[in-house]
Image 1 (tube, rainbow over the protein chains, first blue to last red):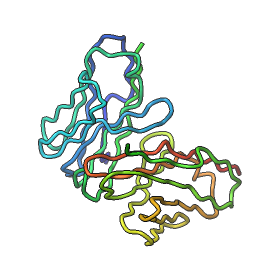
Image 2 (spheres, rainbow over the protein chains, first blue to last red):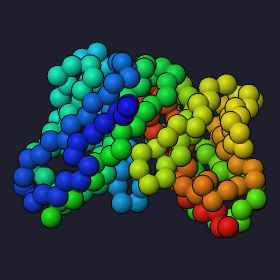
Image 3 (cartoon, one colour):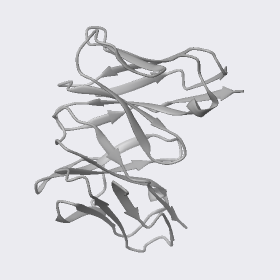
Image 4 (tube, rainbow over the protein chains, first blue to last red):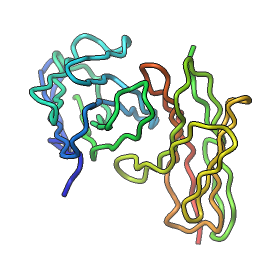
Length: 115
Length: 109
């Protein structure tokens, strides 16, 4: 049983396109996240979503928008893709929100390549 | 500015060696420090530390936090090739989680 799953695993697309990455967790957690890991393996939080409260890392361009249809899903939609968006995107979930003591469970990642 | 700094950036050791990985931080409203192991895919959780001086241990791995000096260490004794990975340190603040760039450990047979 996969705790945190993401689709697709790989995504190759042209600059300027709009794409979405889906994430689902079956852990019953209240909080979900999106992370970006660049080519240097630096992991940076993009969004945290807890009980309809969205906490955004203000360095994230507004071309990126998270959408949560329910507690178990947090999808990431990206408009007008740019070359610099190429990275591995990880979804994660935790029982408690940011600011509380917590452990995060990560999905397998989606490798996005923008040509 | 909040930051998490890990050292060394990379480390190559022989099987059986003991290694110490370092993580120092400056994070506003510190909540917790977490260690993760990342092999080829997703990071997997190792430890969460919130109090100074209390060692967390799991098999050959152990970790301790010093909140006065703002650092943590991760020790791995009797290293094995399966320990080869990137070890990530993350520090939770009020509304954010900051990751270091990781230490790449390579264990040679």
